[in-house]
Length: 214
Image (cartoon, rainbow, N blue to C red; front, side, top):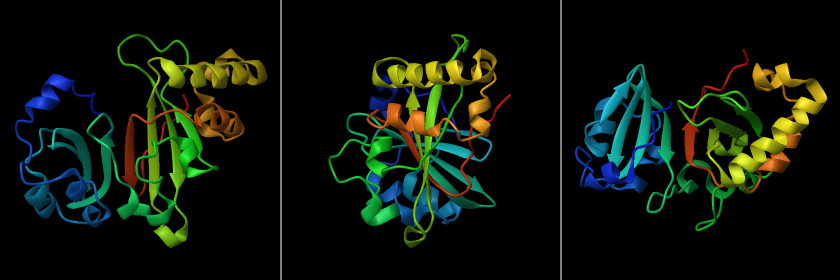
């Protein structure tokens, strides 16, 4: 579920977005499990599609719906000024408080950490790190995937800490081949490094895809 982030200029145009729908109506737990026809009756016509992933603009905010077998299984939202995700409808009391920045630390501990790349990544696309949190059974066991783009600031600093620790403990090839995506022994290091890093996008649903090792 990886569409290239839309520029602010495109977002402000909002062409093709539903004018009636609001972000709260579309990025909402009630939309999970609905059929594609109903979802589009609320969200409008998708701006683009890539396999099962369909990108919509709702109040100029990018929301991607994963639709398989005719039903919505996950929703992803890019976060920015004016595009804030309210997670209360999905996970109730386990959601970060209103107005609180969404960070991995806002969900407590126990997340699973992965990354698309940490070293020798090339220049085509900024790499991202991901924190996967699974809600308790009382909240339906929903999966929450937080995405942090490693383009500078706190996110890049956290990635550097994580990378340096793993290189020292497991070697350079371990990091280059993203072996950390296939085991959890360095998740505690990532958890400490990323706990206060603002999230760039958030995905909620079931069976969310995770990064693999090479």
